[in-house]
Image 1 (cartoon, rainbow, N blue to C red):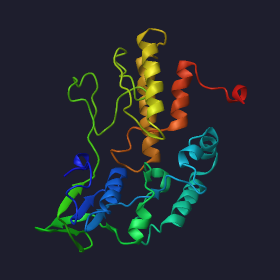
Image 2: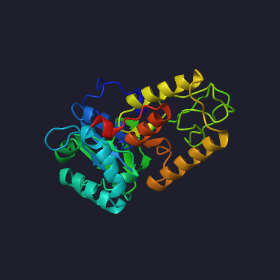
Image 3: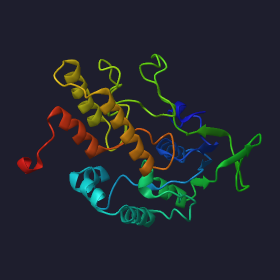
Length: 280
C-alpha cells in the first residue's frame, strides 16, 4: 500500500510492518504503528537529518526560526557553519550515526524531516532503521546489506507525483516536478490562470496560500500587472538554479521556498510588506 491510503492503525495490530522511505509521512506513520504493530521497520536509501518540533524550553521551533532575525542570520553566517551548528544540535538529541540515519548531504540541503517521537521509539526498539530494499521473499524484505526483515505489510512512502492531468499541457506542463510558474503562481503565457498553494515552504503553507490569493485577485481585477514574459521566465530559471545549488538532487526539491523571503517577495508586489522600523 501507499502512504496515501493509510488512515489509522486498525488492522495493523500484531503485524510486521515495513516502510520504504524516510520523509515526514513515513515517520508519522511509523510512530503511529509502533503503538500496535509487532515490528516497525523503516528503510532508507540515503538517510536524513531528523529535527524536532519543540525547542528547549518548550517553544515550537516555528516561533524561533520563522523570523526576520533568523532569516538575516542564515544569510550572514557561512553555509558550513550554519550546517555544523544544526547537525550538532540534532546529534545531541539522537545519534544519527549509531542508528544509520546520517545522510551524505548537509542539514540545509534537504526539506526538514520533523518528528518528536522517533528518537525514543528507535532507542527502545519499537522502530528499526534499515538499509535500502534489495529484494523480497514471500514474507520477508531483504535489504542491500543482506539483512532480512519479517514483513506482513509493506508501505511505500516515496512521495507523490503532482501535476494537472485535466489541463492541456500547453497551459501548464510539469516535467520532473519542475513547475513553470512565475513565483509558483502564474503561467508566463496566461495571465488569466493561476495556481495557489503549489509550493513547499520551510514554514506554514496557509499564510503563503492566503497572500498568493490576494495577489491573484489583484491581477485578475487589473489592479496589478504582471511583468513581461521574459522577466517571468528569468525569475523561474533563477529560482530553479537556487534550488539546485542548495538542495541535493531530488524531484521533491523543485518547489521549495523560505517562508519569510517568499512572503516578503509577494507582499512587496502587493505593497503590503511591513516596514519593521515603523512597526517597532
